[in-house]
Amino acid sequence: MTKFGSAVFNRLVIIIPYAWLMFFFLIPFFIVFRISLSQTAVAMPPYLPVFDLADGLSGIFSGIREFSIDNYLWLTQDALYINAYGASLWIAGVSTLCTLLIAYPIAYGMAQAPSNLRATLLMLVILPFWTSFLIRVYAWIAILKPEGLLNQFLLGIGVIDQPLIILNTNWAIYIGIVYSYLPFMVLPIYSALEKMDHSLNEAAQDLGCTPISAFWQVTFRLSLPGVIAGCMLVFIPAVGEFVIPDLLGGSETLMIGKTLWNEFNANRDWPVSAAVATILLLILVVPIMFFQQAQAKADGEGR
Amino acid sequence: MQRWSRFNIVSLIFGFAFLYLPIVLLVIFSFNESKLVTVWAGFSTKWYVQLFQNQALLDAAWVTIRVALVSATCATVLGTLAALALTRYTRFRGRMLFSGMVFAPLVMPEVITGLSLLLLFVALGFDRGFWTLTLAHITFTMCFVAVVVQSRLLSFDRSVEEAAMDLGATPVTTFMKITLPIIAPAVFSGWVLAFTLSLDDLVISSFTSGPGATTLPMKIYSQVRLGVTPEINAVCTILIGIVAIGVIIASVVSRQRETQRVKDEQAAFGH
Image 1 (cartoon, rainbow over the protein chains, first blue to last red):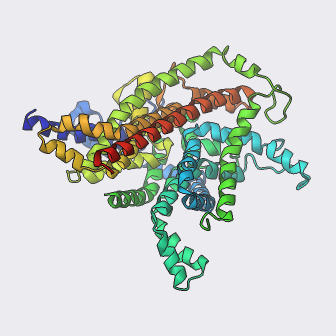
Image 2: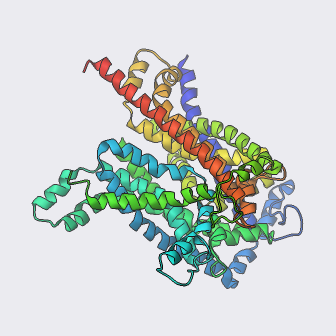
Image 3: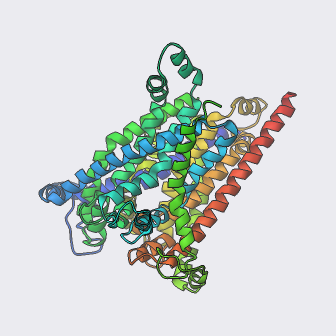
């Protein structure tokens, strides 16, 4: 092959995936934004076109003059949306914290395990992640129902004498998120802990640290990149979660993912759901960039 | 063994019990005689028999498998290229944007991805159905493939590639003869991951598919909303079985290849 041929190969390696993601990932966001500025119409698709390219440049200018921020004003006027954003951030935050508290001891135990056991333990953590999300959420319905397995068990051993109402409350959402996202938290923490040099912890203890303070000051700090990556992997998707609040949650709290879904599928109001999505994206931009930096740092270490 | 303390073992046991108990219960109750999924009334496989008489469900399963096969294969090619671009070419215009576009879909809430792809397809005037579903699945699964392949590319010794190039191999030959065989296990697990992600997806599929292209998760979801039945438990059990077998085979294959590789290297270097 000629030099020209290899230059083409090098180019194509970058251009093909680049172009694909541009077209199917980035450009769609601009379309969402554009439609969030248009007006609802009874038609198919159910919005008024903002640009009419047939009119050329003047069409674009008159289109820009017709941009309407009505959809955004609508979101601020109805407390439903603001509450849904707030509730989503709160639920995602609390769940992320709970996931961290449960995942850290698991990851720590795995990293301390004899090395011939580690590969098996790792596979045991990954396996549920490959099983369907929907199935794992569904499995909890039968457990949490008032006449479900958890209540049968607790009533049976006599801890409670009234069935606990968990399904269709926020408790069920917390349990669902912690359960579904647990592997996402365990894996990055485990990989940070596994790389760690244990002599550092021993050195700290030799120099007079108690085991607990050695853990806080050495082990935990060194695992912080994994903790941050794990928290982002849980928090960001959890804010926009739809399946868990829909199947396990009740009517007391509306999360934003479900609001968007209802707006789109039940009310068929595409411009408002586009506005809901745009704001959600703006809220998540900072954590997403944070996540990306953590990823880039992790790559840099590997090099 | 002071490090592997009792505390570690207890936290692992509780952790794995939490992860696996719900799935185990779901599987057990798929064999329940009664229509209730919370009261055990004896062993029966009647729900499985009923499943294979449910034509709508079988159709949905067939659509799901076709979409997953096509999209996993395309996503593996695109994701491997993306991983190469990220690890081999550290400087090119727009690299920041590119790595952003590879990592963002991993955490992007599915409702946003689904809605934005749907609006793209509508703007282009595509009919929603099998192909829009497949394009959507390729887009979000290729990023997972890229991450899996990238971690393998970062950990391997590039001097082998450089040696091949020095001996006159073109980039294409080097890639085919040297790089690809080394990263093959990662590419394969990327494919399996893309396949299962596509098999499972509900939210993005609901946005991007049209009449005539109902997938199994969409079917399961619409039945779950009506109530919990042993029939759904049976579908779920079959899906879990397929995924578990696939993952175990994939990990055994990659572990064998890894031991083989270590042996080969030791033989080559005469240790």
